[in-house]
Image 1 (cartoon, rainbow, N blue to C red):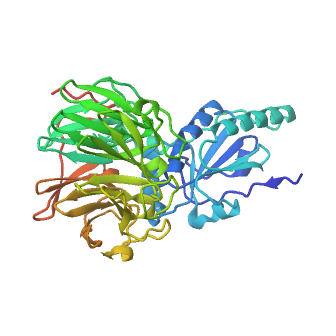
Image 2: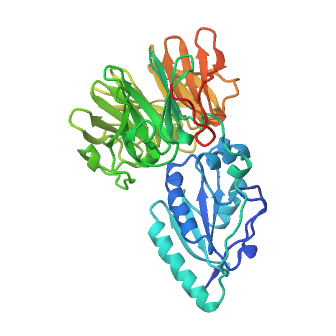
Image 3: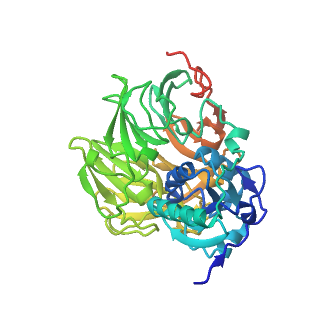
Length: 490
C-alpha cells in the first residue's frame, strides 16, 4: 500500500495561534484538517464534533481549520476573525488564500476532513457532517498503533486564541435578529445566548437567559439558550417564539408568567431530509434560523435542512412545508422546490418570503397555490455580487434578513453590508443604505416609520428613520455582558 505524505501547510495568515503551524513541527501528533467556510451551515454543524474530539484527545490531536472562502466577503481576515469569535472556535485556523491548500489536498466539498498520522501521512479523508464516531474510532486506533511504534508525542499544544486577544465584552454580542413591537424591542443577543427586551427608547426590561450556552427551561434568570436567532411575537397572548438555533429547538417565552418552555425539537440535530411530520416535541429539527407567525401557524426557516417548515400551534404538529432538502435554488411546487440555507422569513396574507442566503436570492411561496418562485437574485450557489436591477440580473451576497412592510421587502444584504429594497411584484431591487458602516447585518424589523437593524459584527442595533434615512445606534441602558456585571433588575 502506497502511503501519501501530507502536503506541507503554507505560511499564510493564521488565526487562533501566535505563529504559523507546519506539519513537520507537528510530527508525533495526529492532525485533522477541517476544510470550511463560515457561511456554510454544514461547516458550523461539525464544530461541536471537533470541539469534542479536541477536548478528548488534547494531548495527542491538533485540529486545524482550513478556511477556504466561498464568498468574497469571507476572504477578509477580520471577518474570519469575527466568525471565530462568534462560533467560539478554539483551534488554529489557516486562511487558505486562493484555495491553494484545498487544491493540494484534492478537496471537493464543504466540509471535508483530512486525517494525518503522527508521521505526517494522510490516512483518511471524509466529506460532510456526522463523522464524529468514525473519527473518534480512527484516532483511537492511530494512538494505539503509534504508541506501539513509539512515534506519538503525548503533550498538550498551547495556542493563543482570538478570544484571548479580543474578548467580546460589549453588552450585545453578535446580535442576529431584532423584532420591533408597539411597546418593546426583542433582540436575539446570539453571542451571549440570551434574548434582550427593551422599550423603544432602549431601556432594559428583561435579559432572558443565564448567558451560558445550554438548553434549559425555566424562569428568565435560569433558562438557557444556545445561539438564538429569529423571533416572532403573539401580541394577544404576550408570547415570544424563538428559533433556538444551536439547540435545534423552538422555544416559547411567556412574558406574563416570565417563563420559557421548549415547544419543538428534541435537543439534537436531525439528519433526516425527507418529508417529516409529527408531534413537535418528538421531532428532531435542524438549525431553525428564523420564524414568523401567521394566524395559528408558525413558518420556520430551517436553514440546516434547506427547507421551510410549519407548526400548528393548536395541535403541536410540526411538518416539512416546502423544499426537498437538497441545497440549490429551484422553483416549483412545495414538494419539488429546492432552497439553499434560508436564513430569514416574513409573510403577508398571500405570500411567504425567504432570504435564501446560500443562493443569494429572495424567494416567495404563494400560500394558496404552494407555488415557489424566485423574486430576485441569480439562483446560483456560486453566482453573487452587488448589483441593483430587476429579477435575475440582481446580485446579492449571502442575504440573511427579509422584512415585509407596506408592499415592499426590506433585505439585509449581509455580506455586502447593505440594506436593500425589493418590489415583490416586479423583482426590482435597489440599494437604500449603502454607505453606512454596517458589518454583516443579519436581521430587520419595521415599526411605523422606523427600521431596526441587527448590525451583527458591530454588536449593535441600528435605528433608521425611514423618512430621512438617518441612522442612529440604539443605546441600551442597564445592559451588561453576562460575565462582566449583573444588571439591576427592572
